[in-house]
Length: 275
Image (tube, rainbow, N blue to C red; front, side, top):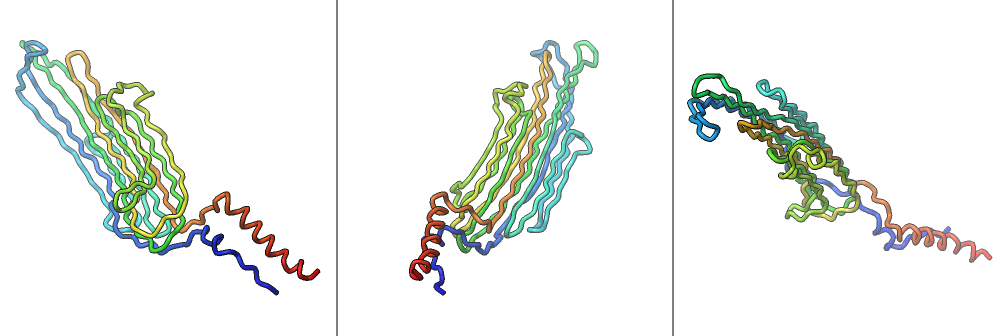
C-alpha cells in the first residue's frame, strides 16, 4: 500500500506548540485617597483667609509575589465608595485576569456663621489602579488566542480614567492593543463619560521571542467647589483578558481547498494504476 505524502508546503501552514517560559510578572491593585477640610473666613467670595486645614489620608496596596493565582479586593474604611479588585492566574498555556475599580469623590461648602462668615470646604479625592503584566518567552512558533474587553464610565471634566489591554514584543512593538480614555471636556453627559465596551478577539501564530501581555486600569476623581456650585466626580472601570497559548489556529482560506485537492489526487492514484 502506498503511503500518502502531504506536501511540506501544506504542513508549514499549521502552528507548532512551543515551550513557554514565564519570565516576570507584575500584578497589583491600589488606591490612594485624601479628604481635605479647609476652614476659611470670607469677606467676599474672592477674598478668603484660611484659618485651618486638616487632611485625612487612606491608602492600600496589594501585589502578587509570584506566579500563583492572585486574588485581591481592597476597600477603604474611611471612604465607602472606594473599591478595587483583581482575580488573575498565570500559566504557560493560559493567562487570565478580571479587574474592576470604583470610586466617588465628594465636594461641599458650608457656612457655619459669624461675621464675617466662616465657611468649611470638604473635598474627597481618590486614585485607583489595577495592573496585570506578564513577560514570557516562546522557543518556537506557537498558536495563540487573545480575548479582551475594557469598559468604564463617569470620568470627564474633573476626573481622569484610562484603560488598556496590549500584547506586544519585549522591545515595545505592539501586536494588538485596545485603549479607552475619558474626554476632559465631558461634563456629566453619559454620551461622553461612558466608555466602551471595547473588545478584541485575535488569533494567529507568534514567532519565537519575548513578549509582554498587559492590562491596566487607572482612575482619578476630582472636585470643583465654588460659592455657586459644588461638583464631584466618580468613576468605574473593568477589564477582562484571556490569552491562550499553544492553540490550534484555523488554516488560512486558501490552504484548506488546496489540502483537500491534494489528498483527493493522492487517493485516486492507486485506483488509476489498478485499471
